[in-house]
Image (cartoon, rainbow, N blue to C red; front, side):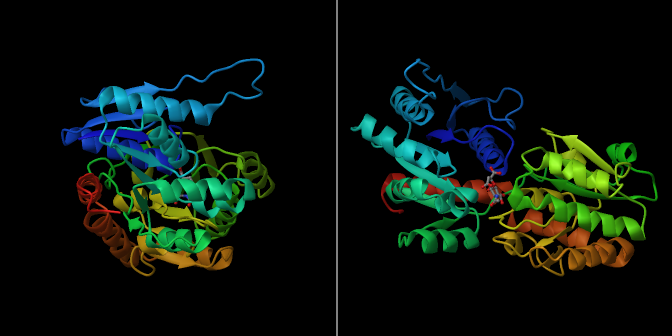
Length: 376
Ligand code: GMT
């Protein structure tokens, strides 16, 4: 098949999923065309069967801002025609589903199909904005197929938009050749002494991630045992996080690693992953940590319980319940037998339920079905 993929190329779970999917489809022999504003961050070196079509936006004094969305729609239409694409798979409803809808209107006599994957805040946050609600709804309704990354997101989307159409739940996935345990992690030795536990959080530091809860949980753990906290990523809450770390006098124990392209070795260097989010449709980073044998302590928000099984691969508490999360973290980090059981169960679950091969097959089946006209 000839498949176009549009996504946010910068650091973020939706871009990571779209890029890993594109790479896997290309390995299976499909021709994959990324229609993007920049080279996706997880693409890495050259891949056979992958083409990148970066967007050029127009600037003109009359236009206060470059008409990015319209240029993207025109660019999608151009690539669809030029490469005779069968499928245009867009990741994140806004603006991509709407751009794909416009591209379809531009291309007219071409029978390509639009698949939209909903990732999370495109539904749970952006749809709260009155000015975007109807536009996102249009994009979802006009897509030939809609998928969402967890059952929780399927249910929320149907409720928020009053949509009756079928939304396929296709879970995110992990490449276990890349994300796997590393009992001899050299990186771990760079971060922590032998007797120190390593706690990890990776995100784009937005409010929904509740970074201050990460830090407060860590502060309680740190009172009971020697430990380090690795914070990976950046975003609007980063300065607040730095201030909080300073005010709790944790500077020597918290390492701000900034944006990192390769998070697998960092995950494999950790003992525990913290994900205290207020909204989280799936929690790809939690899955990647689990694949490395790292259990998760987090909240029951959104799709997290579909990824992390409470009492088996981690522990979950209500949003904001820092004390309970800190208690869980301490339990896991002090009971070696329990920890080993959770760590093994995390690896097993990542491999058995979320292995990349199963999910890519699922997307491939959806593409084939929609092209045959037997999928909605
Ligand atoms: O929706 C977002 O916040 C952005 C998006 C991203 O690009 O990181 O994150 C969402 O998509 C990821 C990949 O499907 C999920 O793993 C994240 O849980 C989800 N984030 C939220 O729902 C907050």
